[in-house]
Length: 84
Image (cartoon, rainbow, N blue to C red; front, top):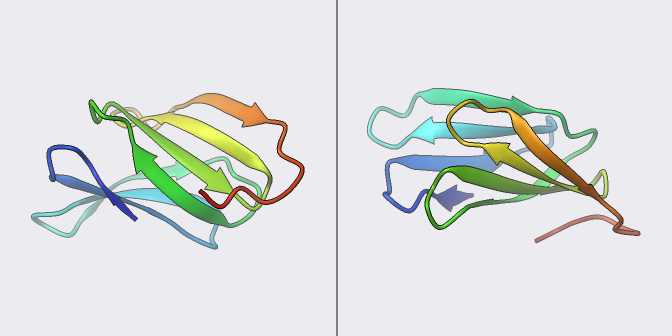
């Protein structure tokens, strides 16, 4: 899990292959990011909070728009699981 720089959102990765963005104040899920093919092991907000990076068992890193939930980039090339 990872807090956004302003502390208002929390990103979590799961074995359901999604990244979820949560409102810290209400506890509501505000966005579900779908696209990984296997477990999501790591998540991190960019310093400005506008993007979220995720690493997965599917050997990819994905870069997401934190506002729209769109996948901006899929980075491939790891020979194994991406854990951080």
